[in-house]
Structure formats: structure tokens, C-alpha cells
Length: 277
Image (cartoon, rainbow, N blue to C red; front, side):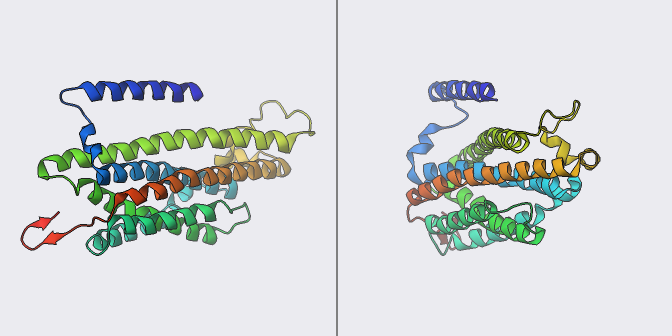
């Protein structure tokens, strides 16, 4: 996994070097000289990373710890998605009333609260309570969908807004990719350590049993063949590793909140008959 990350880092650096010298670059780095664009893009990078921590590991928690089908675990994300839809609309409306910075500050605080709540869950946490925590995450993330996009294009004329939008979306997607890679490494490492701790002193595991493979917990049929005592230890280890990952997700969420302050006091201004600026 680390080898893949290193190769990605090297290739990404090569990409940046090529782009800075290209006559017609995919990403126009001159746009990053604008504080509002640079700030909104960096915030989007960290939001993308933090969001993937929740979007990927909440379904795994539900399916692997609570048990159930993949369909049901996927559907549990609906409250988070609905929460994000609500604040995406609210955020778009508020851009004419408040500065991008103030709106995103509210968003960042809500997002951090959401991850703080997720970092407290256990196998005994009710699904209703987990759903409420997910709604908080969705409410925090939702603002960014509309507000950061508007902030990214705000400083530029019509001829540059397409490039600004695509660059902003690319950086957010990059954050998602890096985030899930890093979180995957963290979760897997912690899960393995917790399993070793749980099974220390119990002797060797029966041959053919992949108790260290979390995929065994995602199949109802596979779960049925695991002894109850061992299943409890594995689900506890999985739960602990995922909660550990949610705690790490506070880092990109906190960095996003920090960079929100460089967005400045600008907000969308609508002139009658001229559209928006």
C-alpha cells in the first residue's frame, strides 16, 4: 500500500512539473494567485478527504459490526445525503447574505462536531443515534457543495469560470482519492493490531479461517460460520479500527476549518439585470 502511495506522490510531482511548463496546461496555476480561489480549492481538498472517511466507513461499520446486507448498509447513507442536500440549498441562498468565509466556518464547525460524535460510537450504539450523527456530517459537508463552487468562480470572468470549476472539482476529487487511500491504510493497520491483541494467548486459529480479513464480516453466510465468541472479538476490533479512522478524519476537517479563514469577506453580489459576480 505504501508503495502505491509513493508512486502516486512521484507521479503527481511529475504532473505538477509538466503542468507548470506547458503552454496550454490542464490546470492553470496562475489562478491560485487569487486568495479566494486558492483558499476555496484547498478547503475543498480537505473536505473531500474527510467526507470519504465517513462515506466509506459508515456502511462498513453497519454491515460488519451490526450485520446485514450490503444493500441495507448502503441505504443507511441516505440520511447523510439528505442532510447534505438541505445545506447545499441553504448555503447557496446564504451566499448573498453572508461571506463565503462565514458560511464555511459554520459548515466546518458542524463537520468537526459530526466526526467527534462518530468517534464515540461502539457496537452498542443504536442505529438511530448513528443516523443522527450521519445527519450532522451531511449538514456540515452540504454547505461546501454549493458555497465552495461559487467561491471558486467568484474572482474570474466568464472566460475563466469553466477552468476554475473543473480545477476546483479535480482538487476535491484528488482529496477524496488521497483520503480514502490514507484512511484505508490507517484502518487496516489498526484492525490488524486489535485482532492480534484480542487473540493473543488463545493459540493458533483454525486453518482455513480468515479471521483477519474484514470481508468475512461483510457476508452474512460467512458470519454464520464464525463461532459467537470469536465473532464478537472480530467485530469489536473492526468497530475500534473504524472509530480510530473517524478520529483521524478530524485532521483534514480541522485543516479545512483553518484554511477557511483565508477566504476573506467576499460574498456573491447580484446586480439587477446583470446576473451575479
